[in-house]
Length: 439
Image (cartoon, rainbow, N blue to C red; front, side, top):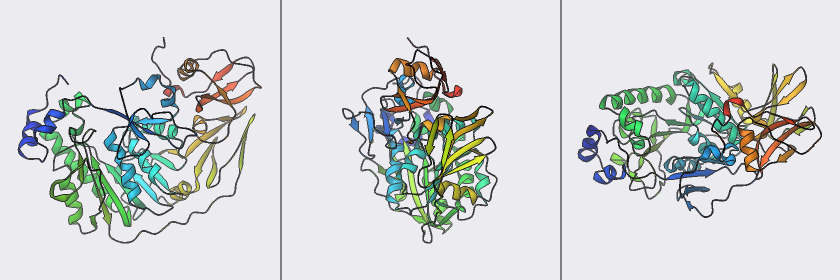
């Protein structure tokens, strides 16, 4: 139970003007569950068979207790992502839309990236996505999480949503996980209780309306708008959907939501509600724009190879290798095609994967490459060695021919080292390093 009481005005609203009532008030003082979703893009998945599965998302589990993720090398390797269980429903929802191959999607308010990962995992072949986040610090976290998941078909943008207004009929689907008053996080985050007020609800409502206005035009005819918040009040949820429907451009898209969900007011959207579903609070609704979606034609580039000192790798089918200034980027042909069609100056922080940097001494592999499934020479390590590596440290290592290697723990790549014969240089990104003291 949290020591910070629920806001009185919030309690009054829930008890007098909502479908949730006292059970929600009681549940918000319970202990939240911890859940993770596995990354099936990696060569093998960690064992979670002894844990309870999340019923509405495949390859997702509730943990028996919350571990210290910072001290688990598999977390840093992108083997799984700790994600609130309700947010995982994005995977099943996107799967149900039957988007065509070659679709281009947008996660407009994407950080820290859990819903981006779920959305991209649910898409068919040859699709691409832009994950956008307006706050620079949160955009950096978004880049890190997308990198660890191993995507070559996602670009990260650090832009205001107003920058998307001129992209007419560009995206097959847009996810707006809108900034909100955070009522659904009252159990998990005590600061959410302190920051809530009637005025914050009003400000969030206005901001959400602006974001929807900025993005509605960039959805293709027949495309989808997925709208979500982690809050319970009508003005931030059903009222927003009603306003979109009132334009006459969209219609409500049926979705077989999990049975634990509560149908929203007037049949609009669905709620995950603490005490009813094993999750925190989430509202989610999906609308379809009038018209018909068509598959996109993508030109597949010719195979190529990039050579490092002591390290070669082949570019996979459907990928393209792009060299700009002193950097080499590896990205899917679908992402390359989508970025070439952009007609607005987005601030792109990440374009697929940055795989190498050209220096006076030759090409140096970048961390993104170690997170992919490309065959790269690897050296196995223990858990203690893995944690030392993640702190930026070095340790005794068996003799190998000099060159670049991936350090690997339990079959999962952690990042690059440069073996010098008797010792190695640690190439793990400095800004991602563990700062906790290791016993």
